[in-house]
Image 1 (cartoon, helix red, strand yellow):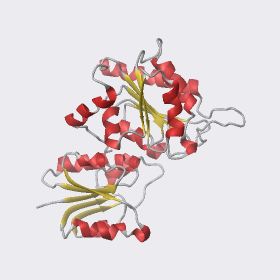
Image 2 (image 1 turned 60 degrees about the horizontal axis):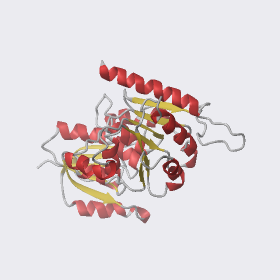
Image 3 (image 1 turned 135 degrees about the horizontal axis):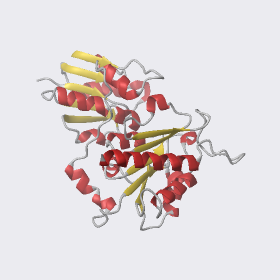
Image 4 (image 1 turned 135 degrees about the vertical axis):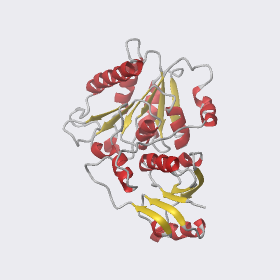
Length: 317
């Protein structure tokens, strides 16, 4: 029996970006069930993924001992295909076809580079499709009687402080966009953030009216977050794994970039907008010394409004 071994990243964003390759392989080789090895954080993204029958979460250990332990747990297989985005020991297990990540390109987006790893010349955008059961379970967060109100998703957090647009800017943006004259009048606001990111996200939660805010900070798994995002009208967030998750569930996505690499990690697709600091490469965190904003809130508001209206116009055509 053919089997595929798929080794994804330990980090959420990079793991999400590999889902396009996984979706492509599952569709191309449906007779070859997939075993996914990844970090424990993104693990639940793959558990109900079509074509995946086994997921192993890996916790890093000293001297990379997690790799021989994982290899032992996989058993003695001759794999039909190994795709290894971590260039790990697992990539050298016996296999007919092997694709080992050898490093990226600072001018090539990950969805293009990931596709080329398996010999595909077209981009393979991230793809996460929540199941019906997962969507039903998300009603715990969204409520059953609120389906008529659109949801604006905001993610004021990132894994490094210089990538974080100030929480007051996110609050101002949410208030303007959901106000009477905004593009999403009366919308609820879902605030996302991982455990440990409360300092940046909770001020937004606390400043919004209780009947408008959906507080998801530190409360969801990555797949739960993806499922909720799939039901949102618009996402706005920093350079983060949540931003890539939003593109993976194909909702309009705005990514805010400063010191990151937008050419490599910017939101991908026709329904995405990447806004960068001025000058490019400047941290988007507020400059407390002079009160300046490298990513001006009013500019962001204008560009988000124009972007969303354009998306809606294209959808109606």
